[in-house]
Structure formats: structure tokens, C-alpha cells
Length: 323
Image (cartoon, rainbow, N blue to C red; front, side, top):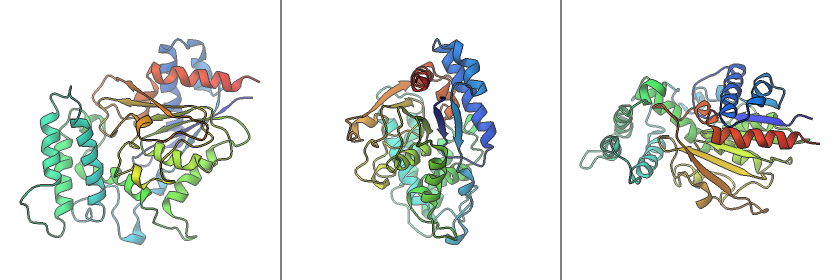
């Protein structure tokens, strides 16, 4: 029997789930080839190796009209409702990045953006936080690759998509049935899982937060959880707001591999084993650094094409498929 393989995406605009599933599988197949699993490439792409699913929830992040909030193409006029949360996320990310002793060329830009997020001696008035956030984000967009390869054509678009992290963690925006946004997002992930059999989960970016919370209430078994470019290490902006507290490895997870790239701006403190508590079975995350070529390394496909990521995942698929 084929194991279930579930991909959980992160922040971003609307996407085609079928096209995304194909792209993620092809990236995984590329990584498998480089990891010495060439015999599995066709099986992965054709869906013979695993029952692959793409847990899509991006359509739920439309404009939060009930709260008078902004759309993903936010600008200075409507950014105030979420400026503080996104600014805190960026501050933590920048601080972690600046703590790297090997940092060179981009350090000056990061320090400038940090100062712009909290300028000294600047009067605070209506909309000032939003203006500061957009100014700092424009500075960050000058980092190599963020604008070109990150598909963020403007500071407003970047802020609007980063805001999805805050919108999820606010536990608000109920629908007509009273279900909050975070509940509806987790429900999409739950629907992709297979409680009757083994499910391997690959989660990216915000999807790592969603997945961790989902698996705490999941009755099935997850032999392997793979997280890519996770922001869970951000203490204030993310981890302190997750449920349940303290943040721990969910009971169903048999093994957790967490991958991060040194040049991934979205990742904060990358070594999750230092900040996440073990499960009841003493399972802890194992964090491994990968180095992708190219300027914009955050996309899931970049990670999946890495042999260090694809190799263990393919081996876990093979193990789960054994009777």
C-alpha cells in the first residue's frame, strides 16, 4: 500500500494546487536523483511511489472584510492594522541574521532596515508605524534576489504576504459559521492526511506552524515530518503565539527533520531542537543547514531539490511502503 505524502505550503498569493503539487514532486525527484535515488524519479513524478496531496489553504487569505483589514497588495493607507506584528517578525528575523559572524555584504542593509523599523526621535502619529514598516521593507527589497526572485514587486506586496503569519496567529476572522481563520486553515491540512495509514508530511514556511498545530490533534501516525524554511524559531512573533504552549513535538511524529538555508531571510532561529520541547516519545527536531544556489532560496522547490532533503524523504517513503 502506498503511503500518503502531504505537502503544506506557506505564505503567498493564490496558486493552482495541481500545478503546485506537480512542481513540488518534480523538485523532490530532482533532489532524489542527486541523492542517489535515480530509480525513484519516475515513481515520484508519476505518483507511483506515494499518494501525494497538496494541502491548499491560500484562498482563505482573501481580504478580511469583516475586520476592515487590508488585502495582500497592502499600502500605507491600510497597513496600520498589522504593522506592529509584521514589524516584530522582521525585527526578530533581522536580529537573528545579524548575529551570524560570517555575514558580510548585506549587513549594512539589514542594520539600516532595523533602524527604520524603530527610528529614534521620530514623532509617532497615525499611520507612522505603517510608513516605517514600508520604508524598512523597501530597504530589505534591495537585498540580492528578494525583489527579482522573491516575486515581491513592492514593499506593500511583501508586507501583505508576511501578514498572513499574523492573521493566522490572531485566531480571528470567523466565517459565517463562526470558525476562525486558523481553524479553517488547519481543517484543510487535516483533510489531506490519512489517519488510516502512514502519512509523511512536508511543510514550508507558515505551513510549518499550521502543520505543527494540526498534528497535535491528529489521531494517525506521521513517521516523518519535514519542515522547510520554518519561522517557528521566532520567539515573540511566532512561537509565543502558537498553540498549545509550550511548543512541543506532536505525539504522532516519529521523526522530525528541519532544514534551513543560511540565506533564507524568512527563517529566524533555525535550530528548532533548542526551542521546541520533545514529544512524549522523546522525539526532537533535527535541524540541518542546506546551501542553495541562487539569490532567493526560500521557495519550497529550492529546498526539495536539495539531496540532503530529498534523500531522507525518499527513504522514508520506501520504508513506509513496506508491508
